[in-house]
Image (cartoon, rainbow, N blue to C red):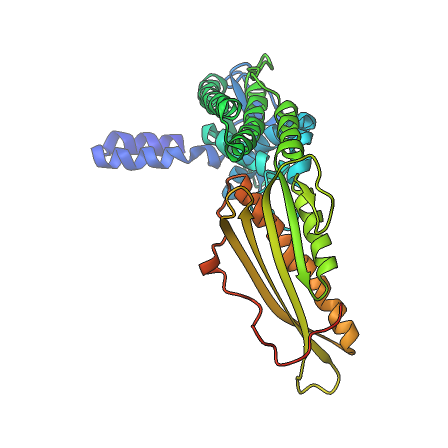
Length: 379
C-alpha cells in the first residue's frame, strides 16, 4: 500500500495528488499496524486532561461513528440525572398534568436540550478498522478548553436573562406579570443548572459556576404567590354540572392554583379569574339496535373579575354510546371530565404562565345548541 501511494505521488499532477489525499483521509478505516491505545481508554494524543472522549465499535462505519457520539452523550446524561434532585420541586410541579407534555419541562426534555448543545462541540477525532475482526472503531470527543469557553458564555447569557426576570417579578405591581416572570425565571434556572452540570463534566477539575438563585426558592415563591394572591373561582351549571366542576377544580389545583367552587365560601385569596361553564346532555336517536347514545356539550368563558372582561372561551361537544342510556350518560360524563375539564385547566394555566393565549370567543363557537329537540337528562 505504501509503495503504491509513493508511486502515485511521484507521478501525479496537482489534481491527482488531491485525489490521493482524499483517499488517505479514509486510511484510518483501512486498519493500521497496531491497535490504537484510545480504544482501551489510554491515549497520549488525546489525554483526559484535554479531551472528553467516547469510543464506538460496530460492524459498519456509520454505526461506529453513531455509537461514539452516543458514548459522549451518555456521560452528560448520567451527570444531569444524578444532579436532578435539586430541581425536583420544579419538575414535580411541571409533571402533574402528564396529558400535555408539549409545554412541560421534564427531565427528558432538559437532558435533550442541553446534550444537543454540548454535542455541537463533539467531533470524530480518530478511526480504526480491525481487519481481522472486521470491526470499525471511532473516537468521538471534544476539546475541553473550547467546550468550556462556549458553555461559560451560555451560562452568562442565562444568568442575565434570569436576573432580568427576577428583578421584573419583584418590582412589578401587575400580578400576572409577576407570575409569568417567576415562572420563566424558574424554568430558565433549571436549564441553567443543567448547563452548569455539563460545565462540571467538561472541566477536568469538576468545578462549575454557582448560580445566584436556587430552583427550589423560586418555585416556592411562585407557589406561595399563587396560593395567597392569585385565586380563581369556578361556576358550572347544567346537567351533571357537579362532577364537571369538581374535575375542573382538581385540574386547576394540579396546575398550582387556589380555586373556589360554585357556592363555596369565599376564602382569603383574591379571585383574579372567574371560569363560568355550562353543560348539557340529552339522548339522541341512532339506528343502532344494540347501543343507546347521549350527546353532550360544554361551553366555558374565562373573565377577569376586576374588569369583567372575557379573555377566553372554550367549547366542546360530542356523543357517547353504551348498551343503556344510563351507562352512555356515565361514559359521557367521564369523557367531559377528561377532555373538557382537563383541557380547560391546561389552557387557563398556559395563559397565566404566559405560554399560549386563550382561545377567544369568536374562535370558540358554542358547543351547545340553543334547542336540543329533546328533554335534557336529569342531574
